[in-house]
Length: 271
Ligand SMILES: Nc1ncnc2c1ncn2[C@@H]1O[C@H](COP(=O)(O)OP(=O)(O)OP(=O)(O)O)[C@@H](O)[C@H]1O
Ligand SMILES: [Mg+2]
Image 1 (cartoon, rainbow, N blue to C red):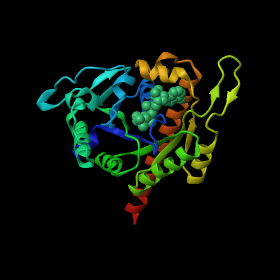
Image 2 (cartoon, rainbow, N blue to C red):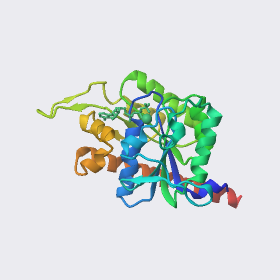
Image 3 (cartoon, protein in one colour):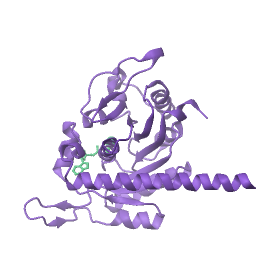
Image 4 (spheres, protein in one colour):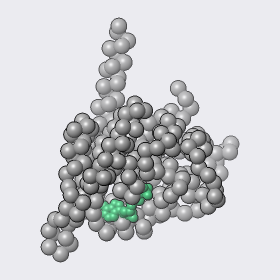
């Protein structure tokens, strides 16, 4: 076992083919939801080019040094957070080639005092290229989560995200459709701005769990921009309910996979 196996029981990467579909928003709100349920949760911002997690989690400042050259994560909303955005080198013109990003991530895993985590959520940069592959290979992942918006072009990219996880033999824990529809705050009429239902169909075709659909709502953006995620700002809202449901499905899938693996190991042992 490698030393970083101890950091967290489960490590989940949040990916998308396309940029700007809401990976970081989903990563933040899922992390906070799991923490609200009593889990020990870490959130690792692996987006070195656009580290948005500090703002979305309402955090700024630098990590305090821990013992033996380690760093303490910053904590808010019950979640322990690390991001290149906290480090001075976040502002420097560093050329982040894949191997360098992988090295930094490994340092974040081994040199940050995470404590005993139940879940570590890793927010990946957009895309499915070499950088993302290296990133996923640098972390002992339990599984990956794909976020997509409903348009065909986003779904096409989401499929690439799934292929990336397949290639690395990382189980896909679920697909989330974000900005799925718009509910008029005045008349409650629903508008499917970017079409609707494509992600669910794709999940079914690919035989991966569909974790749910999140509406487009300015309050979700305000939560991100203001550093108070919607699940904290409005814990009784539809959004918080959707995130709780997604988190529950995610946990069920992780546990099912773990049981299946244990059974598999047993079968092999008996041969
Ligand atoms: N359901 C939603 N309703 C309204 N705004 C949203 C929703 N989801 C995300 N946003 C907003 O859309 C923008 C992009 O979201 P976010 O940063 O989470 O996407 P991303 O996939 O992480 O982007 P990137 O690829 O740049 O990392 C943000 O301003 C965010 O607040
Ligand atoms: Mg992001």
